[in-house]
Image (cartoon, rainbow, N blue to C red; front, side, top):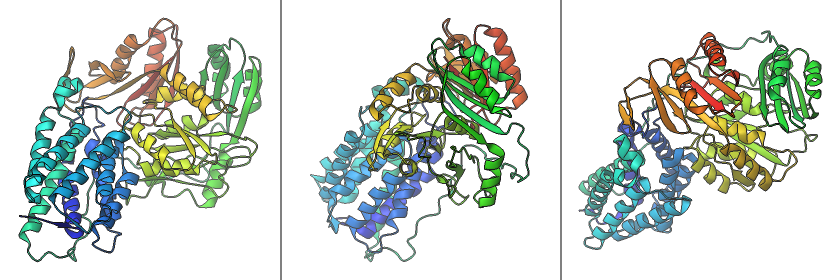
Length: 592
């Protein structure tokens, strides 16, 4: 029987909870509603708990209150994904309930769990039942009911686990999408594994009569994380490498009835990496060319020019190498040196191999926002893939946070990106449904005024960025970007990680699947054919542009062949092709 919990015991309970969760991480990851290769709930929860333990280890005493406060802070800053954020809120409320305590009994433990659940529900704008929220609520209810009957903490934990497991079984009854996929909620399952670990450690404490403090060998367990994809090293850049088209030219064209297709045709022969997006009143142009003057001259034929920016990419590359900041490219997935007229912007790289899930950004000594731009509202966006990051920067994003499918950035990553933006007002584009909640929490942790446009795809992000107005207020930009993001139609092509039956589709493991606006529409054997079949369902008569972003596993010639075929299949649409470099997803698609 265990009657009291002190700081040392609770530390070991948290430590064991993390270990059990890590041991079962893949079992949680596989519980995706969709059989796509981005099941990251288990990984996100492990990283969130790992951050909590890391912060707890900084506490030199065995003070229960200090330890749980540290766990709360660590889990909040390290939270990744929706389930990770909710888990951090459960810990935050739990810590609030134990504030000032040196040791607690069973009832106090259960009451703190109740406060944790209340805090988590309040943190979510629209709580959804059938998720980790439901499971945690039933866990806390089971613990409280048992605590009113006995002072044995082990019995309370047994009741909590039993209630939670029963609630987990019924999550498909509360959330139809779970029932259709034949799975229980992944976040709820992960939470149960943590509870089992807590129970095991509490049982060990009950058997150890001499346990008075944290064991001297009590260190954070070594956590070996497997990324869901293999990261292939990139060859190191050479200082004397030749850039075929030297000048990155960007401009906004404003006018009436802008002929976007004609503008694309005019510019297509002047360089590469062409991007022309927008409306009949406003178009954003991006092109790598050796004659930026000719680019601007062509644009001037159709309207007035605004926010002109011409960068010498060869000089950028040389300057960054001379600064010593471009290092270890074999470990880096994305380094960019987009600059303004008087200053280099931030370059993006992965952290060292010591923490393959943590991302930071390295700044050039002169990486400041030009005062000439006089930007009122800064932009932060999340992107997976070097090509996609570069496209977002060309559309005005100040800070790109590396992340997306399978590698959701932490709240701390987002907070740091927000703080690096020079403006006091910032808009975040999470570009993934599993990052929206983390972005909303990050917005609350900074002194700046921050809005989150809840973009869930690259297509939505580009549409939102086209609507951004350099001279508009934060609220006006938020409203216009929100409206713009809702007009976008997005598609993804990837592979199934398991068998799944959804509506009329029997999807086999490793089969190629096509997803339109979050719904699986097509299954097949060939990625190119799946793209064609998916677009047949996505493209409508009024659509004019199909943009394809091909991933890191697609050869350029394969993508070019697909683009050529699509121009035949959809003769009324302009086909744009870009290298996105995204992992796991063969193609991202935007239709407008």
